[in-house]
Image 1 (cartoon, helix red, strand yellow):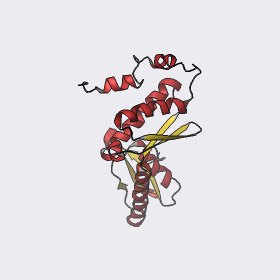
Image 2 (cartoon, helix red, strand yellow):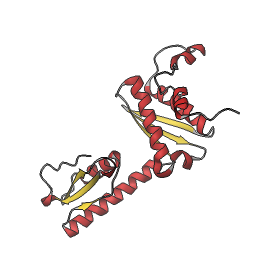
Image 3 (cartoon, one colour):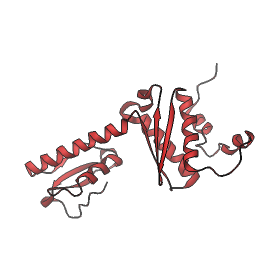
Length: 194
């Protein structure tokens, strides 16, 4: 029976780790060696990863300038998304690492499955709108729960031009969160930074 692969073996197979001779397999397959674009590199990585997780998964990728939006479909997407989206975020992070290895910081990846990210974004928007309303009514600053940088950015962008409230991120690491202030009570230098 084949021994269970460690994450390093998997990453190596997928060409994420330095040791992996990514090009060798391609040349042996007789493909031309013209440089691949970001969409091809991303697709190759994700297809390799998805095949190992569940052969029923497939991916659709759209490129919008330097942003690559990948949507995973088919198979057990709940398992791919993972608890609180952790598996999905880990796969997105790895996809970013692969692109950075090939193209430096020129491209960004957003990975979604079954519309999970969209639903999360709507949830964050609702939290931000409710917070703005509460702060407007009470005149008191309100601390939101800790959020990831991308989620804090949504709150900052959404409330950026609000006439009555403003935002600021506070805290370190996992505890970093947004504080919504009445505009006239905002601490100096509050600029809505993530």
